[in-house]
Image 1: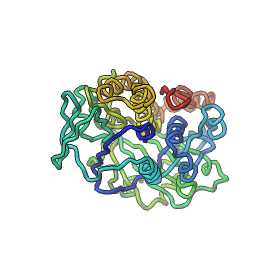
Image 2: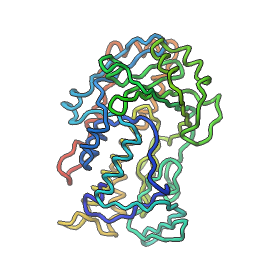
Image 3: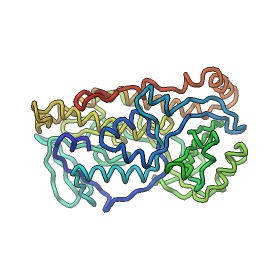
Length: 390
């Protein structure tokens, strides 16, 4: 979409045979919302998004509030945009609709076989077709093949945790605290995140636990019997336990991630460049995986525009690898910081014993200051279309 807004020609290769929308809840911080609105998705986000009033951390066993960070109006005043929660399927629908409006024509049911480096980028499809281009953008996720074309790309590995998701068909009372907030329940070795989605019609829950005792395939939607959550039910406060026991369909997937980036060469090589999970899959504990991919796409598109001839904003084929290198130079340190902070947040949420008590005391004493992320949300305020740095 960012490329098409600039008039850039592109071929979009998609392995799915047809559009498919699936998933559960997803959080979009101000940094992601800012870019999506610049891409023309403001009306769609207003329709599908829910705007939480606060982010609250609670103790999993007692349910007691440990800290609360105001969001909504405060974020709009401070960062220009709010945090939104959406159903992933709704976001996928909105993205596809907007892409089609901009003239993007996905080539459905096409699998990438290989990428060859030469004078130009050469992508060979399993159908036998070869595409010659100035730049090949790998946006094919955690297990995509485009990563193989970047020799120093970081390879994902299992984190030792699983995420188990479910949803309630009825949300908490919208006048209650839970009905207005993103809630993180912290417990020893596990934590739970919950928030309304679909404009408050559903309530999404994500449980993060140790995966050592379970054998999972790589699927991100393995059915998960509620009996396996019995220990968590017993350790949860009454209100949360009631939520958990009311979910009929649990789905689990193992969490994989790459190590924090150490240099720009992990994102680019000659005519190949990686964005999103293809280049830097990260733990979900900072709710920034999707946002980092969105930022990647915006920065790469605008580097291509910046290197285009005066008056056209479209980079010539020979300038596209340079634009990709500039993108990687801009992005890798910020991405590495997000990866590191996400990893640290996951550990903090699941502390045990005296360390958990110390965490709780710190949150009660200085929660909003510890929970706010100005380095993340306030970075890269959008100016005009050619003056963007993220």
